[in-house]
Length: 351
Image (cartoon, rainbow, N blue to C red; front, top):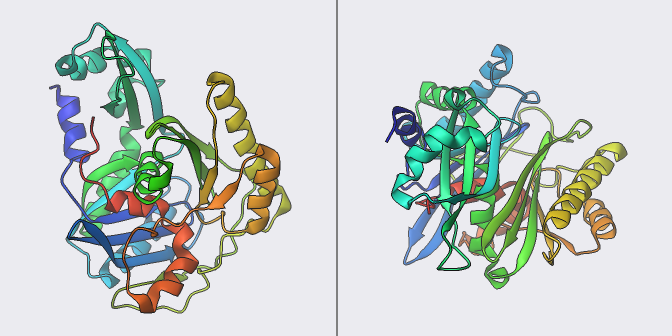
């Protein structure tokens, strides 16, 4: 294994964890799970509003504000020093299905180290990468189908350093789309073997994943220009745990600007058209929605009209046990937890 892949393994360790930390463009979401008798129980779900829209971790002012928000959240939850699973997304991340011929499974690391430039639009010295071997439709096939994931080193290292400075240990780094898929396959068991799409719509962008036969077919990250959030600075909601905050987060996330909603619908439709052009036999039955901007029923109606399929709210906590006295608060904010739940469920999803 090359030095670069050893470095990747250190950052993207496969150690088991039950704490997922989703750092979004305007909020930070934390989910802590316990596993008992084969079932998951929610120990904590906390959301904190960032003071200003977070764009790039390189900006010192935004970096400082994010660091303070994360430190306050983790300290309040009593999780300083704990291992956490994190994720990255956006233009610095690439997820791509590729086919490789004539390469044995045990030679993939070396092959991708030297030949990855064929598939990755970044200099190999500037990225971390990993891959998942997807199930093969024909056992006699001489090709391997992989899900190749690449992320710019600067983004991964910046996030890793930030968390280590606060006092937590990132032991898993995923990408938002794959974490989201893990969540929906855990909770939407009736859809196993079927085709559907999931959109995690945030203040600054959207993760859109198309799933076919329990495997990710296409993952897209889209950056928005017009979206805005109705959240106010410093708001936080804690569903379970020792700290309590008054919050306006429970029903938030409506795209107040009509042009923002139009952009979400337009970008979603564009992605659907592109994917269906590439996979004309794909029959996408439903679109599930989560994320801070997804809670408006008007958005679901417009997406249904634009796509011709049901656009449904996605509750990532449906199959997770929680205390009855906090269920109403949890359900009101559940749309915010899709990625964080998937990160907390993370064990070893390598092929």
